Image (tube, rainbow, N blue to C red):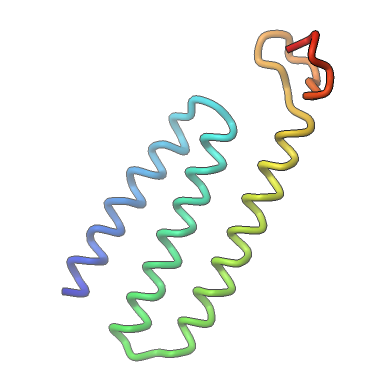
Length: 99
């Protein structure tokens, strides 16, 4: 049963990684990287249960916390300043007439 769960997680990781590579936009890539990190957390948790290693759960929780903080920080930074795709100029969401 553990092997089936790990295989499904690996398949999910491959699909999320494909989404991160393909795009189409930077927020999509950041969210797919977050999904990849969540799959890694689940992978570590399943290994912890299968190998009877309680310390792996702590590692998975720390990894999940870092993954969440990094995703929120990157998306927040993208919200406030980003490159405009057409003009390659910095775009700020408070300038409504340039949007």
